[in-house]
Image (tube, rainbow, N blue to C red; front, side, top):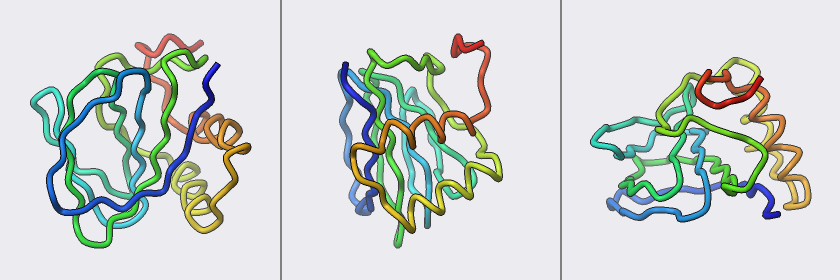
Length: 132
């Protein structure tokens, strides 16, 4: 089974478009803002929210100056089930604190599964995710 991956990324102001075949992508804003468009909707990612992009969904994105984002990539074969349509959701204060810690103290890949569990535990569960 493939494991979750975490990436710290800064995006350019150039608009890029692509899709991911076998992963869910969750984008957490750390600093600055980033624009993402998918399913004919525009989203502005900041430190207060996160965006879930389902597999195989074309999405376009561009960063604003000084943007930094934590990207959580979950394989479709993972144990977690997320909102099939994706979308933007508010972060809890605990999640914001955890993200600040991860930003300040990046972790080795062998700890990504543990961090993924911690981050997902802080996200507000949506009924459509199929989690009890």
